[in-house]
Amino acid sequence: MTTWMVALMVTSVGWAVRVDSHSWWQLPVFLAATAPVLVWRRHLASALGVMVGAMAVHVLAFGYVVRCGAGLPVAFVAAFLVGCAHDRRRGVPMLVAAGAFATLVLVRDTAAGLALLPVGLLVQAGLWAVGQVARSRSALADELRARTRELQALRDERTALEVADDRARVSLELEALLDERLARLELAASSQDAGVAVFTGLEEDSRRTLEDMRRVVGVLRGGEVALVPAPSVAHVEGLLARRGSARLSVDGDPRTLPPSLELSAYRIVEHLLSVLDDDPDCAVALGFSDDALEIRVAGRVPRGADVRAAVSRARERARLHAGSLEAKVSRGRARVVATLPTAVATAIG
Image (cartoon, rainbow, N blue to C red; front, side):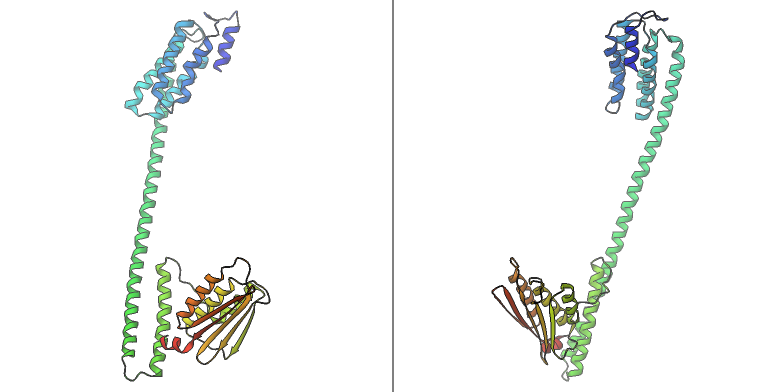
């Protein structure tokens, strides 16, 4: 708009109003007086100072021309921005600068003149008041957002404290549970008449202790207690079914073994199958005897498989139950035999 008005004054003749200058220099000077309002966020006071100075140069250099069409809207915007950006103490001097800019726009304006100055100043004052209201609303919204974040932080802290309190309570419960079970185990072990019934009771107590510990540890980890039972020998068939082609055979009389031994047997098979090809040549055999569970796994080893690591993990599982594991790899095939004594596992529960 500024460019259009200045170009119109420079190129036109025979205006009904007085135009003292037709110089093209009006355009850059007028732009210097109006464009700084665009950078008000960086430093509004400096922008107003540049605007007032440039408009004073324009008035002194070019005399009577039409300035109100583009100058007054800029003056009104400046007054509103002063109200939005600063409080009354800092904003009043800047509002005076905006009023001085409006005065310079009208002092040698041939279209409106100083007669319009009181109206212009009133409009500026009204827009400054509107800016003050907008500023207060924005400050209130910022304060509400800050309080909301503070309340959220307090809520999260309270939740964390409640969780920590629950975990401390559960830890005490676990400690009391273990003390009770250990006392019963010590009493039973010191009995001179320990027999099959005593060891059966020890086994049942050990199983209950294991299940209680799993439940409590699940709570301490921060998650829900797992409802799925721990893997056992009965789940080996499902493990092979998920692979697709591996075969399972069972020898002897299958029976329920201590949970810890069943879990270790499942993990041994799982570790070994992880490094074998899924093809019909892969076979798993479980042999149940009176005093041991024998696990035989055979299959093709794919290139790059870390057989040593898998065998090491499986061997550690066997050693937990005083068992043994032998592995042989030849011509791309692996054969592993693991033996887990069941008599020892039954005795220790």
